Amino acid sequence: MTTPATATIRRVGMISLGCPKNLVDSEIMLGQLREESEVEITNDLEAADVVIVNTCGFIDAAKQESIDTILEVAERKGKGLQRLVVTGCMVMKYRADLQQAIPEIDAFVGLDSLEAITGAVTGVIDDAAPARRKMSVRLYEDLPRVLAQGTSHAYLKVSEGCSNPCTFCAIPQMRGKFRSRAIASLVREAQALEAQGVKELCLVAQDTTRYGEDLDIANGLTSLVQTLLAETGFPWIRFLYAYPGSIDWSLFELMGREKRFASYCDIPLQHVSANVLKIMRRPGSPSDYREMVTRMRDLVPDLSLRTTFITGHPGETPRDFGELHEFVEWAQFDQMGAFVYSAEDATIAARMPDLPTRRTAERRREKLMEMQQEISRSRNEAKIGETFEALITGVCDETEHLLEGRVIGQAPEIDGRLLINDGIELLPKDLPAFARVAITDAHPYDLVGAVVG
Image (cartoon, rainbow, N blue to C red):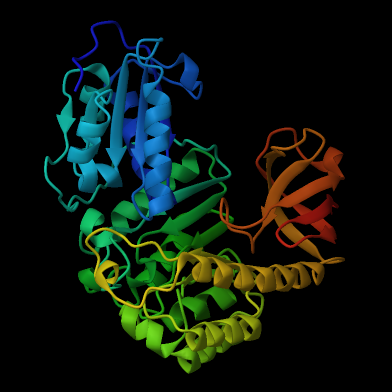
């Protein structure tokens, strides 16, 4: 690695890749920098003296994006950039490889050493990460955060790690076993986020619906949401990622009667064929999942339901895919994602036989997404003429003539958007803000509407 910088560090930029859980880690590191140094945190990476890249190592595409981003930043070394700091999941698993392949990296910070970020940025240290592959065991609580994406929403990480045995997933190798945070700590952090003006609180974890199990909290996630509803005033509280083996029906009963608890569930089923689920070491069957979807919608009639599936997993036969295709047509999900299987290093699935060809897996994925696009379009078109409470977040990325936001059935950064093309004069000048919006048009992913009050 290169020697520590001797020039004064004034501006620090952060690139956070991957999931919302990674973003929380990034915000904790920025919080440490703000508390412990006099550096300026900047969004202008070209003007930054130091750039931190928080990597994602979930699948091949994410790892490649992380590497490409590091290399792109490294090109600025000696051209204004003094230090390049790399942190995140890839550091826990591939630190030695990164150090050898990209010597421009000045410092590594592991998931168990987020508080070392100040030393890594200023050049006091260049090594705060395990030299060999290691899983994270640290659980961060009660640390300051700097919100990196404004105040329309913020993520609250309720637990860390995962203990599920899915054969295709490497997350436990990087993030460690499942462990929950204390409710009191989560309430304090939520109240701090609310004090900063956050409008929507999103509860996230690798296995959110298992929250509290290791703390012997009965109906853990339900208890947490009830406490947050009582102790904070967020207009919207949402949870992300339900695991089909840890569904607590009291959670959906609460969702059905509490307006502020978003009628939304993202449950990554990954597959429905009993054969593939067995190979994946995941619970359930086609009939189990049909019963589950039906019960969710019975308890929460206005539920927006999202899922993801993997195509081309080892052992997936044409018959298995046919079951999956039939299920998607039956379920009529509001939103759905599909991904081609990616063999992850040191996972059980990576050593399995009977791997469908990449071409077959891609074709299956495209077939699923083509059908889902029409389903999503139909479900969105059914909203035309209805009026919803919406969170208007700001100017549209594509054009300054439109505002954008979302209705409660659209999770931030995951689902489509609500585009506002009329009634903008009725909104307050300071956004984000809530408003009543009438839906006037619909597309497979986005809605279009007019502010009516």
